[in-house]
Structure formats: C-alpha cells, structure tokens
Image (cartoon, rainbow, N blue to C red):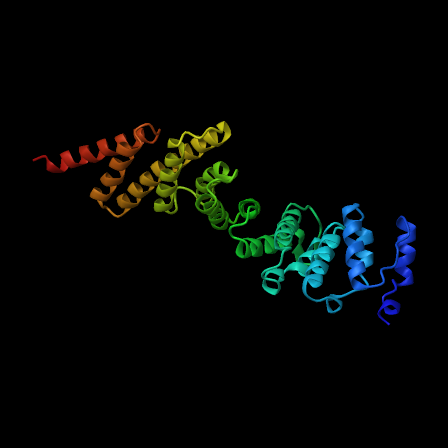
Length: 304
C-alpha cells in the first residue's frame, strides 16, 4: 500500500520531464530521502524539492525525520524560498537536541538569514525580505551564541540597524561582537562603529551635553588605539572635530541662557569652560570678548 500511495503526482512527473532528466519515482520515504540527497549533491534542488513534495513529517521518524527536515529546507532555500526553508528548521534544535545534523542545520539557518538580510527583494504588504532576515538572524544569535557564524550574524544585524538609523540597536550589535567574539574579522570595524553610532545619535549643540561629552570621550579613546584603517581614522577625526565644535557652541548657548537670567557666575562658568577645554575653537574669541565685557561691567560697578 505504501508504494502505491507514494507515486509522484502526474503534474510533478510532467514538470520533471520538462525541466530535465526524468525522475525515478521513489517507492519509500527512505528512498525519497536518498534521491533528494543525490539530487542536491548534483545541484538539482528543484528536482529534490519535487521528490520530497509528496511526503510530510508524518512519513518519517527519528533520524529519517531529521534528514527530511534538513533536505527539504535545503531544497527550498536553493530554489529561492528562504523563508519557507527557515520555517522547516526553525525548531530543529529543540526537537532534535542531539542530532548529528545539527551543524548543517546551524549553517543553513545562518545562510538563510544572511541571504534575506542582503536581499533587495520586494515587499509583500508590510513584510520585506530584510525584515524576515532580521527575524532569522536574531533567532540565530539567540540559539547559537557561540557559533562560528555568530559574529557574522551580529555584523549583518548591526549593519541593517545602521541603514534603518536604529543607532542604539546597531551599537549593541557591534558591542556584542567586540565583547563575545574578540577574534572575529569584524572586531576592527565594530570598534569604529561603536563611537560612530554614538555620534549619529547626537542631535546637535542645543541638546544633551552629557551625550556629546560621552561621544567625545569615546572618539578620543578610539583614536588613541591608532586604528590602522585610514578611512576609520579620518572619519573618526572628522566626527570628533564636529563634536568638539558642538560642545563649544553648547557652552556659549548656556552662557547666553545664564545671561538672560542675570546670573553672571553661571555665564562666566560656561565661557571659562569654553576657553579652557576648547582653546582652538573659533568661538574662543567670542568667549574672550564676553568675559572682557563682564570684567569691564564689574569694574564699573566696583568704581566709587
């Protein structure tokens, strides 16, 4: 009964004949697995997919079930259905904790996510390939935190967050690479990205002074490591110059604020910080003139 029930549908047989050599009809689930493996090895994933399409998880047990999931996922992935492939292996590690195929499933999981996140594919309603890739790789780093592909996955996630201007999320991804994967090829880039994301998250001189000062300190610390990449070094120097200018401008804005309150000590304090901390900034001329003006006014008040 099983052999009769497992004949390939006529539509699939016709498609197989039209697309290449005629497929032998597998008589048992085990034969289907062997044939699918051979077809995948021969770079015929569409044929492997057709062979497996007449079977389901209920047809297999134990190691055969593990093989079926892996081979079906490979066939789907290699015929441009990466999300469907992911669905097949999504719970593999929970369902088959001690499988000999775990390493292959792990690598396929990463490859699916990487392919999706790098895709320029279309958007269906509200979900895009990149959104799917983010889901796949996020689950990957949670399931396989020590994988040899974990740093690559974090890099992909960090770069995606950059393109979406999710600065805090991007920073966290790159920090995880530096902290947990210190031997990764992505460490040098990640060390640059960390202060870069802090800089990108700044709004300008009128906003958070503490955030600007933290970013200044991070950029200085990074440059003190003498990065070998000239692009990283020059871009960090540019960002540092911008931040220093913004902080100097912020001190002048704070001095203006205290002047409106009639608070001379507060005004002097911020003008003095500008002069002491940023002596090369063009705004120091303004600060010196303002302090001279305050000194003159104080002298007049103190005159008999």
